[in-house]
Length: 241
Ligand code: C5P
Image (cartoon, rainbow, N blue to C red; front, side):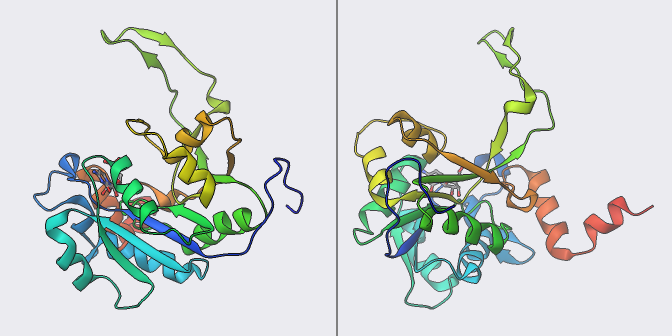
């Protein structure tokens, strides 16, 4: 992709990955904040950071954690000058904003949930390549296998969007840095992903194929799946004839 269709010029400059890891992780049923829960013996946040480093596409990584866990995070993350830990916020959006503020030099941002701990480095490199080629906003997504319905507060179905036109969106989500700064410039905004904020600015967001391994570890079942993937045997045993 050499010709951006949006007027945004490709630029050189640092790619800074922001890793929100300040969630409490209630749905996982653990007492430890989610990003610090081990998967295959290694805390999720460390796995996520190792994936970013292994991609070879990221210049700097900023990890946002709960205030009381800054020291623990520094101790468990790779001891390289390219990884920095900052205090996150009450909501994910506040944590990402803290990361943006800590990287005034960024030319591109990747926002990558610590909870997507098994994301293949190759996916991270593909998102970054699209950014460097001039796309202002790039997100990985997978076709959905369930039929999705909208419902009202009472549980009554209000619509059934056509499945073929839906994607389950993953991270890393990549953005030209100034675009993400603009998206976060307004206080009090709400969105479940960063691309949603960019869409509100009227800027096109491009999807690329995601990867099943970039699933978000949210429930106890997800945690067992992630352990099995790292164990290397569980998945194969489950599907073997
Ligand atoms: O809760 P959810 O699974 O959507 O969280 C996605 C990511 O955002 C997790 O990695 C979590 O640690 C992070 N997060 C954060 N600050 C918060 C809440 C969530 O960094 N206040």
